[in-house]
Image (cartoon, rainbow, N blue to C red):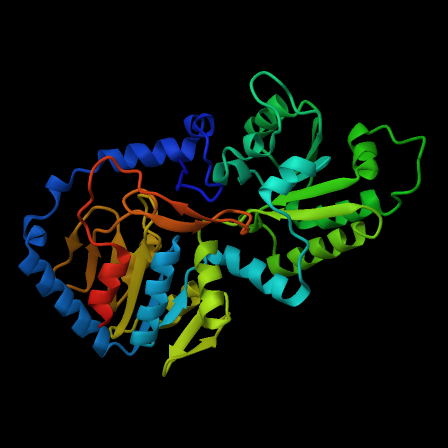
Length: 402
């Protein structure tokens, strides 16, 4: 069974049992009690009335933003269709993590590898971790380990950055030859350049085993995620520098980037197939216009937050309890907010903020999702043991935009 709660899409029971993300998501989904939903919103006629009111608000809007946690191919296509129909701005890159990587790759190219290739052939793993990598991908060490049971993987793991003690222990339990070298993420590429600038020199005074292993490695995988660059001032330039270093390594040996994207990378891929752009676009007269700065959802909200005729449609098909939109936005936005999220049904006194229940991709409904390495596009069958009768995001968007 493929797990849909992080982009590793783990498919083994032993990986499922040890994953905090999966455990927390399952507890939350199992705890929902649809019988506590507002009675009037469970009446089809009342829902029709609310949807019709929202449609009128959207038609009258001077500016519309479509955003959220959009994780499946199916919903991505529906979002693009709705954005076209509503002539909306569109950005689904949470805090800009994915778009930073897309912009850097578009300018400079990339030397990437897949999870399967990295696991099977890498001699050394350089893991760039700001302390949050295993929070986002809890079973990553196990996914890269070739051994099972009590056996250990003898390959070298270099943890570069500021990994937590728990992360170091997890890597060390599977890879005994694990080394942690503290370094600011901002300076990581400089450190790599210094360590490998004289690869061919066999210095007798090299006392660090990890440095000797790094220089002798015939195939190195750089394991990292754009989401771990929150402390880096210019993440797109940082990514370009990393790819330049990898390019230089390939003049003498083999080196690749195992870039771990979040579940939102599915939307970026679908958006690129459909429009030629990875996101942050604005539709005008059926034509998408690429606006990497103006269509940034945070910038858009800042510009339009005081406009009562502006509207936000936030699609969230994740299993997260917290809203995609910051609480400050939910409390202060002057226009209309429509959230398609979770199991709850909420409407404020004047109908300007409505939350409608929807399905979780890969749990309530079948979903096609991109794996973290963006190499595999997997079909994830529905996992829920009970039926969720709430409309899918595709169904809600069709009702709101046509």
